[in-house]
Length: 107
Length: 123
Image 1 (cartoon, each protein chain N blue to C red):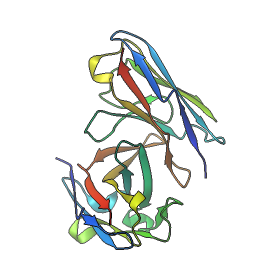
Image 2: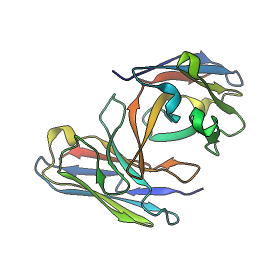
Image 3: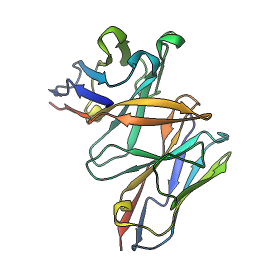
């Protein structure tokens, strides 16, 4: 099974900051990666799919890049609603899997 | 409006079985792949499995961790998705989400999630 390893697991940031989260796959997964944001007590919501495609309605401060085994999610100009947990997700290669998550906390 | 509503969550003892139901509305259920995802208390997301649509003959895929214990099925006439869980373990304690998947421009993502159903396995 392919493993997705996210780093860091936690990060502290301030409103207006730029943050980057990394997701590494244990083997090449082309661009079969999506990113989700989960606010406390809520279901996750998709931000990015196919590594870099911004989901309709998601603010342009979110961007994704990468292919193969290394992927990044970048959030510029961090907003209060972005303090949440972020997950990468492998699709299209079974079994599907999620990364362990990155919690973005207010500094 | 698309809605996914899970039901059936309960407190059960280790070794027991439980079936969760996800009732869908607001879209053509039979057209979509449907997945189950769970989240243990304070933990991350775990993909459990998938059932494809009628065009792909309702074939299924499972996570290694639950293969052989969990079974996903659906009844398109009732707009319902099911998760049969057998031989439950304490570590199966989690909120279970029903999700709708969507292919778009060569990519896949979950565009709708249910509110979740809590399953607690404890003696």
